Amino acid sequence: MSKDKSLVEKKLRGSGGYAIAKVSDDEQKKANLGGPELFLAGIGRLDNNRFKKYYCNKCEKEYEGGPNIEFENPNEDLGENIILIEKGEYKCKTCNYVIAQYRKFNESKNEKEEEVDGKSQLISNTSTDQQQQQVKDTSETENEKEEKESNINKSENIIREKVTDDSDSSNSNNKDTDSKSNYVQIEKIIGMLTYDHNARLIGRVEEIGLRKISDGRVEFSFKVKDSGNSLSEISWNRISKIGDIIILSSSSSADSISRSGGSGDGNDETNSSGKNLTNFNTSASKLDVKICRNCNHSNEAESVFCEECGKKLE
Image 1 (cartoon, rainbow, N blue to C red):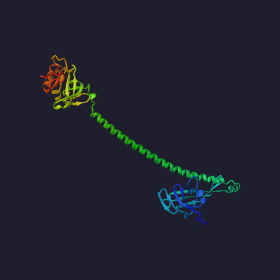
Image 2 (tube, rainbow, N blue to C red):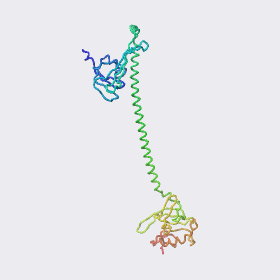
Image 3 (tube, rainbow, N blue to C red):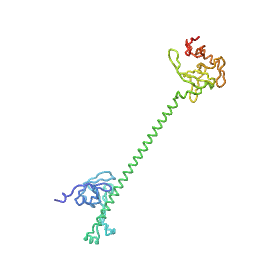
Image 4 (tube, rainbow, N blue to C red):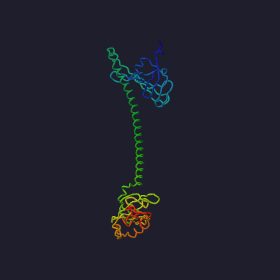
């Protein structure tokens, strides 16, 4: 079998890329540094015609043929009878980026003598340890880079989610505030102080209900009790403003307040400010209501019978 037939194409990794080259079985064993992949650092220097192509991490591109190789023979004594006889680098032909590095060691004369006694394992182990450490450092560098990129992506996602959540929360709060500012519950209206358009106190809201009007229609109204326990019924659409208190429009205070209850003895009625309301109530009764002589209940102007006692109105 020829030498070429014994060579097979393999992917050989380096710290700055990889290469596809033909290697022998012995070279594959040297390139295997304890994992499933093969490394150029374990083989050393290969002839350029053994390479099919290589990939440069810096260029991020694949090139045909082999990379440039630069090497020297320092013959440096590293101690422990270990001599560095050759060191070299595979470099990209385009950008001169280092694809892989290798070191070749040889034993001194004393080591050769000891090898006869079966003690050559020291050099082999030392070389292998250094090569494995080099591969480990390269692997750790790539892992650190991937971990850093992952952390950056996570941070960006967290910031993006935070901004989105804050925006949604702000929009939701604005909607709730607008809704609350425009909506008043009926339960909160009960007990509110009611003033006419001249800021005179009429009394507190006692109850809210529906009042039948002409043609079978109904409208909301509420009754206000003054300091004399007399009730004044006010149409709902006469409210001018409502907040912590109720303010009526001028038409409300002029012609929509009717009174019921009280002592019924014909004495003048007064509100909490001491103002006389007799004339005001009389004009309002003439315009909008009929007072039942039997029970003094305020009825609609069109009513024929009293809604309270059933007596005929005059």
